[in-house]
Length: 251
Ligand SMILES: C[S@@+](CC[C@H](N)C(=O)[O-])C[C@H]1O[C@@H](n2cnc3c(N)ncnc32)[C@H](O)[C@@H]1O
Image (tube, rainbow, N blue to C red; front, side):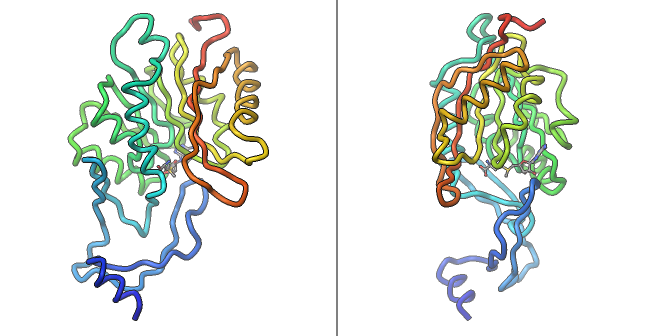
């Protein structure tokens, strides 16, 4: 059987076959098991740039195609533009990760960047279970506060200097909610989404600007990156956006 040959060559413990790709807003995979682990343990621990991600691949997604962005965000925090409050009064950043998953961005940022706190919101209960476990196994419990639930209904009281929106397929609809999380000085948002190549990041950002203006904010596109090709003529792109209240400081 081909699965056994692959397993043997790669030194894997079990083999899964992808049936439908990732489904729905909870990003649930659908796999058929071709071979089973001898010890009954389906969990795997993927170590990437010193960060440990434990998950059950039958139950939660892991996008190996996003590896550059997982580490790229660390560089951007270290070397990129600073959020408005930090520029004005200094100190360390407060971050909200609105779509935390198992900690795809939360873990590398909290391990490698000098931040004050990360609030990591996740709706899928299984992903949330692994998020909590990964926070413990990477020894970052003091820095990261996991929050279980839908980010439209739950969130921290503390406001954010930086917001990570690592979700694709309609992320723009969550902009009004992200503005409720923003510091009164404004914030930097890392906004992922799938964008038609006819519209492109600049056209997409014009839509972001309109939404922000309706909520009393202006938006400036600092930079953008292509994460990967998502489908024919659709790219997964991340936009780094500076959001400032139109009346300068929201009190
Ligand atoms: C797919 S993950 C992000 C993947 C990541 N960009 C990567 O590098 O692999 C997005 C997560 O957002 C969660 N999610 C979706 N809608 C949500 C919501 N309204 N509130 C909180 N979490 C949500 C999903 O359950 C999922 O775990």
